Image 1 (cartoon, rainbow, N blue to C red):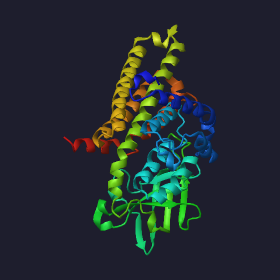
Image 2: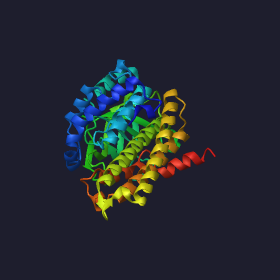
Image 3: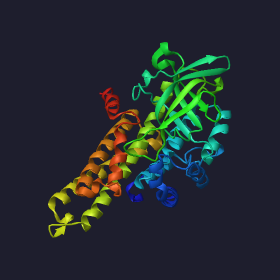
Image 4: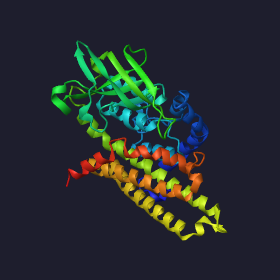
Length: 382
């Protein structure tokens, strides 16, 4: 990625970007294939990432973070996506969970949780989706019932990123089912030696296989009432709506970086691949297809850069974040598909980067709110 292409990338961010790129090349890339096979990363990589300063880069230093901005989270996302190192779930840990705690937790809770997350001692996850409720968060059935100074949680969650290693989980639950969205709250649980908490199997996915995505079960799990995120019940849905635009920008950034890598990989491949006595790049269809793909990636870069400028000014609307999320993930899938086709049979082999990109990219149109939901959010503003 060229810094000159992105107006939001400062000289300091270029230095940060170079260091993150080196860490990924040295500590993540060599293990990614093994992590795919075991379906989760090694636990100690979280500690290495924390020691290096890769975790919580945009959380204030007083809470153990890097003291940066969302631009630092964006750099980590871009570099991991570009390197196809999706197994270390920093987007959820640093870009999402840490910011819920920073914005809504008490000062005592911030000091208890965030420094340990920054060091990689606590791994964060957020539990929204359920077997019967995905993008429709109002349909969740997990209950949290107040009992004296505790909440008693019952229910199940699925598709939970970092679920296998998670030490701290933000659980979206109904504290008052009669109130619909206004009866939804977020309660923080610490999983170590927590009675009634159980992790299900690691789910076998089409792509991003090294990222530990699990089921979670809560059977009369008791947590302190103080673990309610925010000062009062019923604020969970509002908190989710406030934080989801940033999550959707993270997804758009990841799609952009993958799209750009796909075009570069394919251009290199067709220059060396011989067919009918000439290179594949000599064929007009190849050149035109790559011209289309490069154009789309360039447009995506311009759009995402504009969104990033707005994010850093605090001016990005939920509507625009939804546009970035759905459009970039959709175009990413289409660009990768075109690029895979130009690889011929080799494009179907997982030893080639384009095949792994193809498998990894598809979920982008689903998580963070499906693209159909994104269009509904946009349509409501018409």
